[in-house]
Image (tube, rainbow, N blue to C red):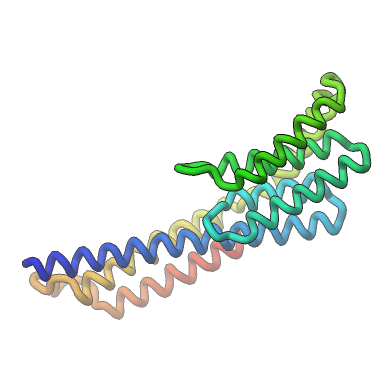
Length: 215
């Protein structure tokens, strides 16, 4: 009995590790795609849309994800360039996006503390440089532009549903395969064979990958 319990515990732990890894991969992929789109928007000089996608990349935060740091760096460059050109409102949006992105990723700890401190220092300087009335007026206009641009960058609902079904189905197939292959054999004659679970897993995995690419 102890050996059986140890084996089942090991299988559950293995499945949890695989699930965490797949979650990390999904976040990494989403962050990478948003960063690449932000770079394209930046090349086309669409600053508001590039800020939107860099912000989206930061919201896919996971530990050891280089695209979060890259997005923060791009936003910092946009902010400094806007400040040099005298567009203080655009600079404030860029620096506040950095700060908000890291605060949004906070859980037990707050990542990017150095970025937050740098951004807050810049924000304080810029707020003192620009009159409050002008700042509020121009920000309201730019916020509306950001809201409109975010509508076009929202994930596709259909492919997002396919993505979620594929991911959950793949995880379920993984559990089914593990339990059918190495779990208790008594009373399991009516359960699907291991290779059938593998087949289901392959189909759901394909749905998951396709959903990630299309969403």
